[in-house]
Length: 309
Figure 1 (cartoon, rainbow, N blue to C red):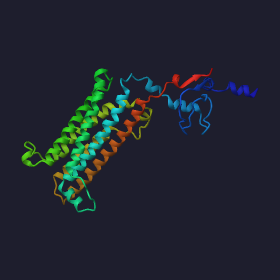
Figure 2 (cartoon, helix red, strand yellow):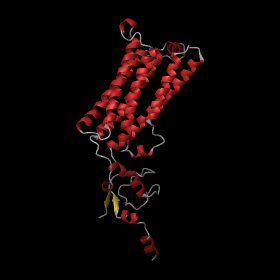
Figure 3 (cartoon, rainbow, N blue to C red):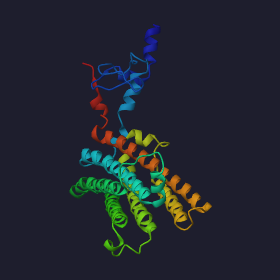
Figure 4 (cartoon, helix red, strand yellow):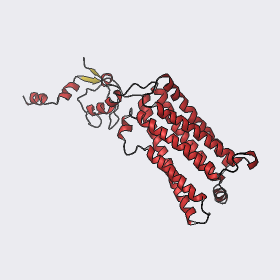
């Protein structure tokens, strides 16, 4: 009698899940145990957590309500490549800019660091990955041309514009620093700060605005991206980091080497570059979350569970 009463007092959702079985291989959200074949009302044999909670963690009804995304695999593969290649290009450019600076180069030569590469090599390295950043945008632009990406078309255009600007700014810096004054007409009288800071900062700012317009919209398809509010790096922080870098570079350019303002500018510049690195690192991580959802989207409830015959 008590058993019948307890059965009648079961929540309705448990009565429904007791009549279905998990049809796809899914892992327990807590211990990664394979739950395929279990009914929906039982607990995980490994950790004892209710199977229904893992079902709720696996399906993503919010993503199913979004508009259909054309060629999700193309977008999912290209987006991390765009951000990663840009990140690597920024590293190459910054190392080249530091090595081309006489003071930094002298410091490296007199230190215990044996640097095997010249600054021109790092400029070429940065140029190669800047070119890849632009090339990786082309497949997404083609997708947008064939089938309009609702709400994302403007963002990918801005990303394309920013990647072109970044490629040109790295090329200009390479020509400016590696060629003699007689071989760079039109660039000889441009201050070095304009070449190594203003042009790149403008291009990077455009690129970050494009990321801000594009990545969060695509990221709505990833439950992890939507829920990870703390670790998700906002593009406004990256734009602020660019301002910090420019301010630090301005202090360095306008003050003598042995002044306090010069050292303060060096500290500000270093902090700004650190913020850029951290922000880009978060952005790369976020795009990997997004890629996983686009390449292997979560199953619907109809695909995940089947009625027990």
